[in-house]
View (cartoon, rainbow, N blue to C red):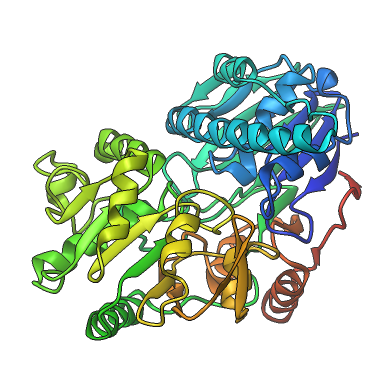
Length: 467
């Protein structure tokens, strides 16, 4: 009999990892993500696998975000040698994401070990090396959407477009056990409908078990029209105050969507006073990947992009300035007003955005604009919750900058979108809610029951379910 053990993203939003065990496929991980929040060195020291990596037969990766893929190098380091199945675009993105994460981790570990040496404390050993990252890439087995492929002795997998980021997939896994077919559908992260550049999440209708994310299970997003109006107002007010705007943005998905809408504002003559900086080497590289894959994305309303006449980086937003080097990034500090800075990380857990906060968060003329979900215990969430003082680089700073949240740019489906997606299953499958904080999942489960009499399970970390 098959079973699933919910090891990560159970009543939490990060660290997606679920262990499927079945005679048909052996032991298979659905995602292998890192928990986000706090220091990367501390997080990796605390991460422990609840299984022996060498006994895992395969990994099925829903998409490239670090909270779904970030522990793959550690998994490989500890003995995993099987295939990592993902879409072709995810395989491309993974090289950018994991190399960037590894570089940040190496630098943070070097600094931490220097501090330990000064105190006479033993050095920390790395959780993984660059060789492990390279091994991850070699173990990747890219697959096309909608083309079934075999896994194990009696299993098959089909990827469907999740509409979340480039390459994101809904996983449909079919098992043949004791003469019976069992079908598991894992949503990964579901995008919202009518997202720019991406197709809507595909609708499936048959499953025995549906594992669905519930990041925004307790609320819907603002409409895109209202969000764009709010964005324009925020920019106008920041300009009037003589300030600058800082946008912490995920390098994959959110940044590219922002560039698209900023390009539209430019065409409307509403961005003439601003200097726009994309201050993230990873986001620059990822945007080049998006440009390469534009022909396979949904460019309704942006035909110039898909036809190859324009690209996001080349000429869709002429006011865009790329600052890949550290020196170029530091030069932005000299701009006193009118700088619009897009930098990672999206939840402010690392990256260049923290350096920009150091330069500007104490000045009430400036504005920080959050355009994506902020998980508990991240700096982004703490700022949204109204903290008045923060520590950056071991120094304390007053928070005087204006804090704004734009809900309509989310890459996740809201509550209504989640309910609509799962309600299309026709044969009354068991529904399991993952990748959401407990309150959000409770609210989603209640609405599913009230409107569709769907009884949803909300697993606790480490809980198992047979099917």
